[in-house]
Amino acid sequence: MAEKWQNHHNCQDFCVINVDYGIGSSFVINHQIYRGSLYGSGQIGHTIIDPDGSQCDCGRYGCLETIASLSALKKMARKVRKVYVRNTQEQNSSATPTTEWLITHYHQRNEEVRSMVNKAARAIGLSLYNFLNILNINQIYLYGRSCGFGKEWLQLIQEQTGFNPFDQTDTVFINATNISFGQLSRQQQVMGIAYLYVEQALKEMND
Ligand SMILES: [Zn+2]
Image (cartoon, rainbow, N blue to C red):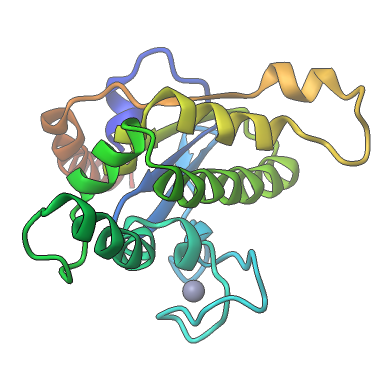
């Protein structure tokens, strides 16, 4: 809602992905948020990436969230941190790493953290590729604390969505797709909630 009402460059179709503790998404199609008949659309976090992967909170195995959400990365990074802490005398070695720890060590080029986070980015890209192909939405905004991984992380997501296994010459699709970090401030994002009521009121006036 915040993107729809406050970003004046928006086209009629776009998608917002929030990569944070979990992974959520929202699709605006023809200027309207697509909610689905059971209000369950946008469950990109539960697209299955690895059927032999670990169990997700939803009960299935290998959902995108189990690989690419911050909570999954933190779980995986716990072991890495343990070894790291032993060598550097950081305090509280068995605690689950914080988001800040992950982001800092990603930028400091900790190889193990990088390989986990990069694998996560590729998984997000792969899910997005499937969505883009189905819905033909070409504008995607990324939000959430994972954006702190920065340009390299974004680039991996972009590369994966540009990769078309069926047609390497499909440059129209590649060039038409724009994946970028969302630019709205936290305040503007929160204001999005208010637009839910604005739209509801407008609808009632017109009914
Ligand atoms: Zn799931």
